Image (tube, one colour):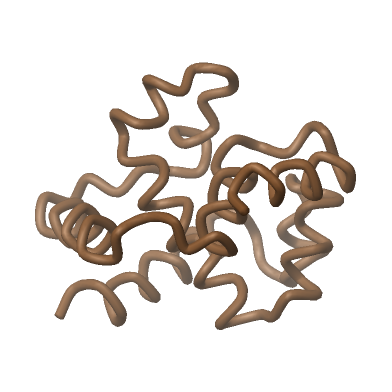
Length: 125
């Protein structure tokens, strides 16, 4: 399922950032252990080491993506988009991944803050 989702995302936009592409594939496939995601994100929150979207866009460097807990964080970014904004906004972001203001009505920094607030509520407890 994970790889199939990549095919669909790449049909919509073959220049989707790594975090968005992997996040959608992981979220839709539900192929990662929930405890792994929760513990990784909680540890990042406790150590104040939450990556930015740019940090997570490692291009073809899967090793760097994995080392920064990219799968776990990307999953939560997509989860937050679906829960806070809906699938329509997720689709629009795939089509225009740098258009946060047009898609969500907020800047990228404001969106990042919304995501961090979301993961605090969901994963910090």
